[in-house]
Length: 255
Image 1 (cartoon, helix red, strand yellow):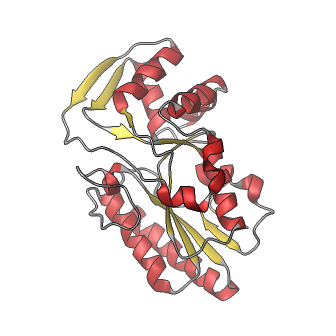
Image 2 (image 1 turned 90 degrees about the vertical axis):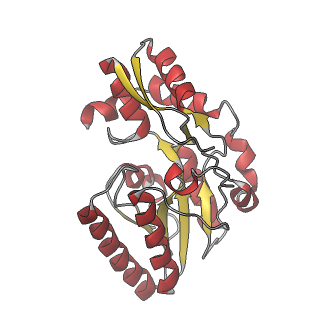
């Protein structure tokens, strides 16, 4: 495969670089769900247009990473499914959904993956877990009351993508997530326990949403999904493994 990008996801995809020669992976662009920069949005849109042209000319499948964040699936009553209408609630989500439409309308062979909150080596400091770790170490954490997040080990995302490409899944939108949203307070509790630290929490009220991301389609496409250990306590294993390896700490320090 050809990987466009040099950041968090791109570096974790390097073990697959010699596989799937018919795939072009766009692993570059806006990486913060809080992003609002029109300049950065436009830069990613131009990068996508270039990648689509390249994929079409070479007869390859373009893999585009979108988002399964609360900006897409966070509305009360949302089923978190790929085949239901969604209304973006953040500029970042609106940007990503717009790029999804660009991919579909291009006519190029493609695979769109809506990713939940990835955790792993090479993360940037502004991403969820490194940012929370940094805040805990600083003694004060900003908390949005009622928020939930679906955490996914980036290594599991790579395994899933490998299977999807190997089985030829094409022209679909697929949620790649654990399917188990975790209240942000529980994430913080486990991080504090793992770090042996306690921080003051400054709570901001927000409209609660269930944060649920459906993995029904993913389970049909990847029959071995159960072997990844997804469940209510999966997030504990993800956080524990990453903190034990020192990966989150090093990533936050480099930011």
